[in-house]
Image (cartoon, rainbow, N blue to C red; front, side):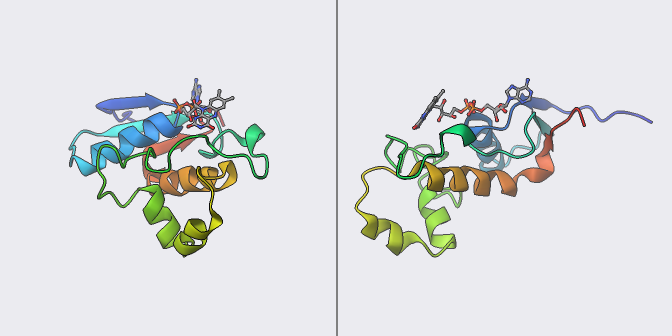
Length: 122
Ligand SMILES: Cc1cc2nc3c(=O)[nH]c(=O)nc-3n(C[C@H](O)[C@H](O)[C@H](O)COP(=O)(O)OP(=O)(O)OC[C@H]3O[C@@H](n4cnc5c(N)ncnc54)[C@H](O)[C@@H]3O)c2cc1C
């Protein structure tokens, strides 16, 4: 059986490569791409999901907004899709909570699961 040859290979599917996947889609890139992620999913810093701890980063500095403020993969659209936008706006937090941000990163990653081999050694 012939192995498929991909144009682009990404090692890891954390925030950096998720942002790359978004950019490739939004640029209508016709190259074939495959990411290898050693974990079973793209959860973000699982060990640090302490309740009430935040990301110490502006919510607009997400996986895509500075490059494309109209993207459907923004943190704002994640909140909207989950019906949490008003709730978030009313929390009064300066920065998103780490737990919520992990949900955002995982939510975006799920859109690209067809491009990712999770836990590839299994
Ligand atoms: C302790 C700590 C706290 C942080 N806190 C914040 C914060 O609060 N706010 C903030 O904005 N930034 C924070 N950061 C910065 C953080 O680096 C970024 O938020 C973001 O996680 C970086 O994304 P990344 O994709 O480059 O790396 P990572 O998030 O590390 O993702 C890399 C991915 O590649 C996978 N991988 C690694 N090696 C392999 C391999 N050989 N094969 C397959 N898969 C592999 C890993 O499993 C992981 O999923 C923190 C960083 C650290 C270390």
